[in-house]
Image (cartoon, rainbow, N blue to C red):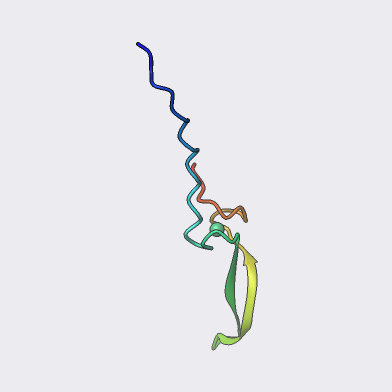
Length: 58
Ligand SMILES: [Zn+2]
């Protein structure tokens, strides 16, 4: 049974990480003291995708 020649489907793109929205970095608030006063924001490594920006499949 011959199949019609078609272009193979494109590889599915990995879904962007929902935590960092695909950037691989997250900005988090830096808090100090018992009152947890906010002193600023800092960019951190996304621990969900480990910086890859893609949703881990495992
Ligand atoms: Zn991420």
